[in-house]
Length: 163
Image (cartoon, rainbow, N blue to C red; front, side):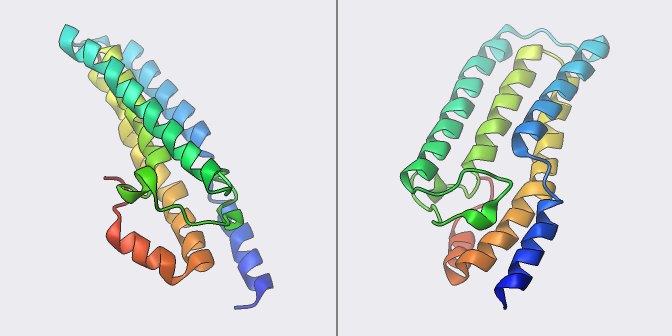
């Protein structure tokens, strides 16, 4: 396929992206707002509150390690321009999940929902997982398949999208 067609397709795909950090913040805030406005869905569980601390910590660590893997590979971490990726990262956490950055963000949202002690707060992580899959991961995977061909296809077959 000529380079101009690939570039044109990449430009069109960029319009689909709602940056992951914006999605993370938006759905975290949405879960918080729903939790504070739906007190009937509140629950009181000290163990679940304390479980939120390690869940958030693990999520932050997963996110940090995933970003560090991209740095070690000298490739872009910018989710808006996956076509600029120079390396297909398949080591570290990427051996277990194709999307550890998004998984880390999801874990932080789940931990935040646990800390809020309200069932409505879990709408944030659920909607984030759906949104990031449809608006970011699937379009990103198309670009990676174009850029890395059979290497990405093989990686996708052996490594799960989430876990």
